[in-house]
Length: 257
Image 1 (cartoon, rainbow, N blue to C red):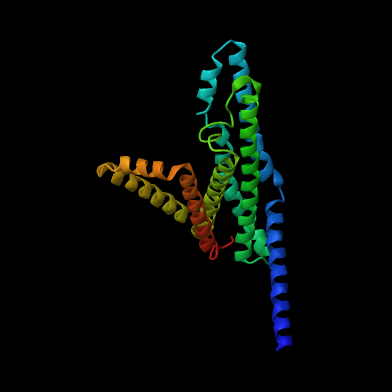
Image 2: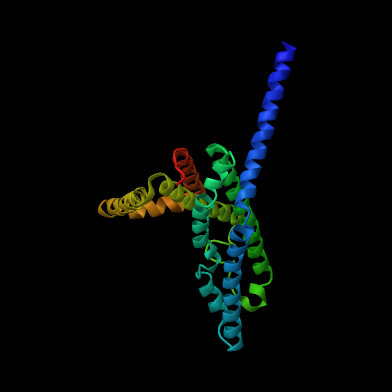
């Protein structure tokens, strides 16, 4: 009996080791060109920061009102500039690597888990950095010239932890949206993709029409106000998880052509 138990334990340990190794292979595959995940997003964000600095220097140099400049920049959305690119990254992460992963014997489940872990790492890295930059911008009073690049929109209101959480949730959302759309295309090609976008547009328009004709927009806004920013980004994280699950279910039957 003891020998049987030991054998089962050894088999489970071996399976665990192989699973970790397989997942790490997928992460390494996704990171073959690290510039895609870790370079371009910061190039975009750095360019937006540089433009904000130049605008701030021009306004300060011309003797403009610094307080109004800072207030205006809080609504510039520059801090979110990499998000649109990360949707494309989510698409490319699937379409470029999925055939190779299957070619070297990875299972679809391990491929999706490894890719999801890569998304978690990228999201955590950017969330830590952006939350820290918000604090630095506040500490230096807008990089010593009074601008608001990172300390904008909802950032800088509830501390480092909330800035990390909100960024992390948003990053995962855009990455998994791109990945899920890519799996739909790989499974059903152009017809499936068009059907998905048409269905999504119909759903959104239907929701808008429902809230408009029933005059329940005030109740919707009141509900969002009740759950607050933390609840809103928890909802964002839940939607990201929904796209992650959708992508996994679709990729199980996606074909490589």
